[in-house]
Figure 1 (spheres, rainbow, N blue to C red):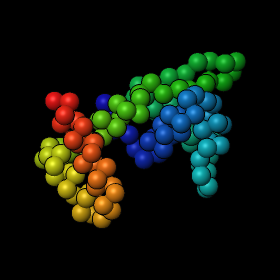
Figure 2 (cartoon, rainbow, N blue to C red):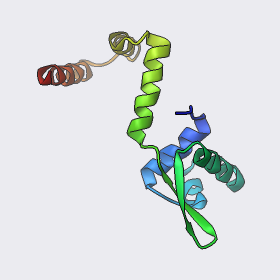
Figure 3 (spheres, rainbow, N blue to C red):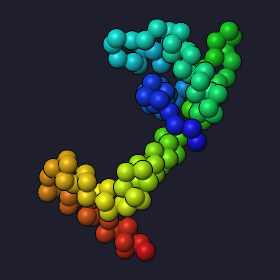
Length: 122
């Protein structure tokens, strides 16, 4: 899977949220200052060439939809994060965020509960 740029990720987030839409629909979901219509159209075509987005023709327009699921992209990006910054150590990853984000006790308890449930499954 090819890495996505920040702009490509932003458009994918919108498509994941709306399910499918035309360039104008994507543009309407973007924050100010909004990019030009042609810019969004170009980025969507790049996403299409990367295999992340498909479309159905509706008259002279295209309705775009994600081919790449949010979950698959999340697995890919977090896997890269673990490999590139934490030497494939999930413990190092969790420890870093626990320290840096100054997690509250409630949040830490929730994380421990999730981990315990996963441990019990195994």
